[in-house]
Amino acid sequence: MGFLDKLLGSLSGGRPPLASSISVKCNRCGEILTARINLANDLSGEYDPKGTLQFYTCRKVLQGNGRCFQSVEVILKYDPQRLLREKEIHGGQFVED
Ligand SMILES: [Zn+2]
Image (cartoon, rainbow, N blue to C red):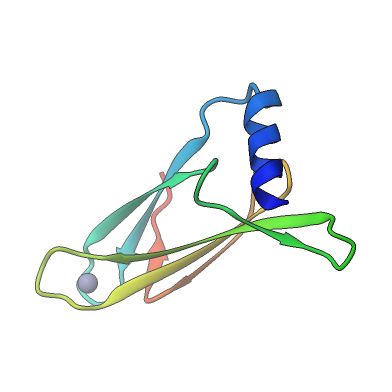
């Protein structure tokens, strides 16, 4: 079901680009970490009991290259049109562009 939705969405979409990136700052060392999000592949659909798509979620865990072992967890929530609606972070802060 989810796969079919994605397939149909990508065929009928015409909404490029289906990718975005997000930057966060590690709370522990201050390193800026960037994650690329592929809106066609990285989102998991959440359905109600009737099978209607409610929203998409995307979870990313980012870790820097330095000596810091703190990982920063980001949870993004998108509406069925794949527009970002909510974001949550653990271990860091969002860096606004
Ligand atoms: Zn760090």
